[in-house]
Length: 142
Image (tube, rainbow, N blue to C red; front, side):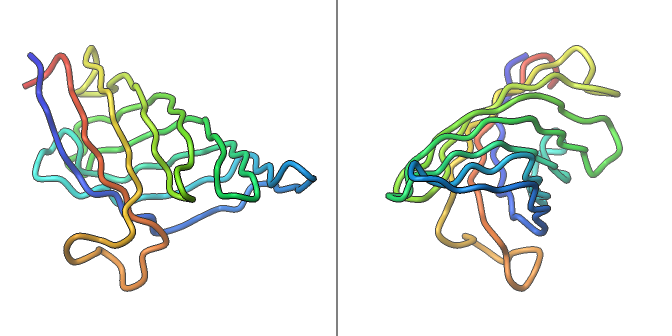
């Protein structure tokens, strides 16, 4: 079964990783972002840990790639996968593909991420570090 799901991800913590700069920009490795993902769908609501390598130029453009694990709030498994994307005017646009674990085993998810300038509702923390709109397609579970 194909199921379309939406969520808002709020970055609540950042582990810096390593960073170096040169004339082409900043090169960041193994930076980990912890996001609280809020969705009315139990198949996407949870905590997402995303570890990225980012290359950002002086104009705010660049690319990112890495891995994620989205552990579901209800305890019914997780999504583990990879993502890649780019910066548009300093904001992240990315997509990821993951496989389910636990109760989600056998299912796959494709997620489109788009960074927002502000949370569209009440964020789960007072000062979000970043906010993302997530649109997902889950294949394999209703």
